[in-house]
Length: 415
Ligand code: S3P
Image 1: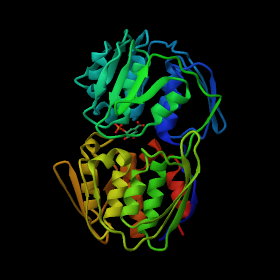
Image 2: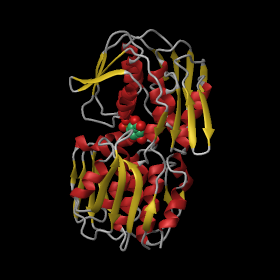
Image 3: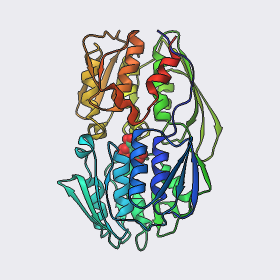
């Protein structure tokens, strides 16, 4: 069954998190339109309220009243959201007070030492449970540092920049490869003293102000599922509207174009970040490609759906150095290999690389598991579209972590 039509994905999850979290440090009031309705961003807004921020929901809008850094000590449930937890660790490290951050079983398995350790070098008092949540933070005076990160992680970079905003002197953060720069753009727009330096970003202590209004572009990582579904399913053609086109987020589109995908990307605006429409049409002759380590941060959340595309491409697709995928909401490498393997795809891991040989006709047999991971659930749903029958997927509802209307939107596209 093909998919056809227009779809407007929800507001970008990464930008929505940042708008909400930064309001804790900022002054002023901001009317945010198209704020992501997803469960992860609800965790962020709940955290903001518990920490002393003031959030109002007005129809489709969220109104954020800046707390100006005057926060209340609190215990915060970050739910399934690694972004909420990691950014908050950096944001709270320099605030007076005592804070405890916890989350669900998946989040409790995720590493926090990568954030806690460099913050400790800045003078922060951050305590983990053997490197994992719950995380306790006793606000302390911070001293700016130079950080050379071992991994390209926007969450880690953002945590350090938020701490740097409150530290004495300068903080410099240098990544091994570029990752999404939503934090840098939004902090600059809020008046922070932040600039590119020495191949990274440096920040100095500064006050920030909320803009009066902010329109969040659509989430390209949500759009990705519909776009790949259209590329691999005969007779399909889908246009995703109003999606964010931040260069740090569109690695999937670059790789798909290299594979010969019939994609049209049209930029339609640049505020607050580049955004526009992306159309995809069924492409029977997709070619395999090699995805290099420096490309991975630019498509880190799209590896599962790119793997599905690769099962339909001619040749062996390789994704190099995807070890970060092991510590997402699930071990996504294991999840992809097992679940797509159960559909008769030919794929395997070697060290930190993933190999997928195509094209293969996927054949549903038995039931499937999302492992409670939204991006695995949505990838399996698109595999079902390709196979012409919906798959029985355990905990398929976890898609709501990033895309609450995913199944409704998909149904509307089905012909
Ligand atoms: C995110 C960064 C990425 C990504 C996550 C959202 C962000 O994580 O996987 O879904 O909003 O900063 P890492 O920075 O840890 O790779």
